[in-house]
Image (cartoon, rainbow, N blue to C red; front, side, top):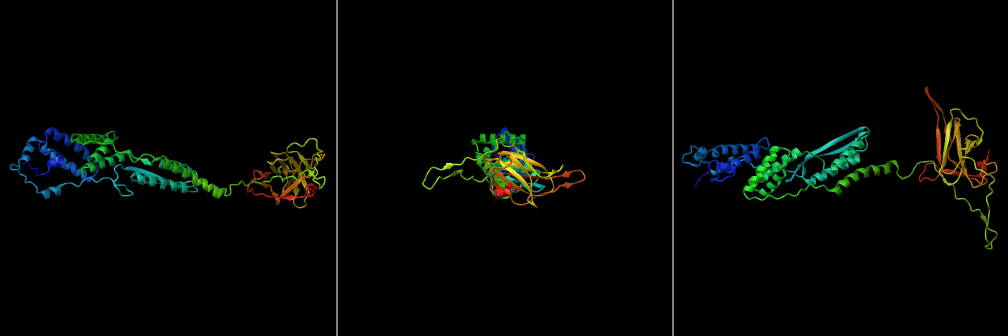
Length: 441
């Protein structure tokens, strides 16, 4: 019976009757698998050394003959224990750097998270070897941190946040060259452990690897498996993109700043503008009696034939300033309005002007001082077209102060604006006044 004193046949994985051509082919395949330029694992380097040593002996006919005849060999046979001692440790399969579990198809990925504050924006990478489950969790975690803390710095916070959330949602930053080395190491590890179907499936993924050495070695491994009748199946990829999870990350990134806007900037969903809506007008009808007779309509007395143009000044009792201030009224209500400006100290009428419904008008040249602003609506106007017959009047609360600021290069004046229509939560509330107070000079 032929012995294998130094384990050379076992190292090459061939029988004692293998031909020189078969030994040569197997050696070339194993050399490509375990060559240090391809496989950086220390155990692989030891395996490559032993394979080379075995080939130098049994790949040479004369040395093989000497090796096959123990009685002529000057080297004593090793004991089984010694032979086992010299065997290399098997190549270890790749483990996920997060959960520590062996993963057949690992990926080296980089996820990034963004944190910003005012003018500071920091992007932190989270690299690692991931299984598909841990990659999904890390992508979501990084996107959540970016969504919560990435928006709040200018100018780069929003830009980096959008970019990194989108990249995380698409699976992170991949490094194909490292990924190919990881899968190749797994192919070797599973080959060592007798999981030939799994090793072959991984090798089949590497036939078109960007690294030509890995691609060539993978093809050789497949040839060895085929020569031994091993069928190679196709391994299902766990890395198929989950469109729902990706969309969830993007929506989360948009939702958080939107919620922050609602809660911090506009807590009640309102516009803060001066606002007023004309009150409901009383019915222009009276009852003819208490016996249920038909009411008699009272037609409004409209003595004004042509209403004033929008912005028309109706009365002015003040000398306008060359560089005066401006009062602007946006009448978004359903009726024309008369605006009056009064001296806050003595109540004297300073000026009045007409603002048509759904239009804007301004009064310019207002001198420095404190003023009160009144306004009124009505259906019918007086004969001189300067007042309403039955005004529904109100006044904005508080005194409006105008002050001119002068610098070395410019004169700075002010503009006060009011909007006459209801805005929920508006910050200016008018107070009703009598027609007599409104019509007073």
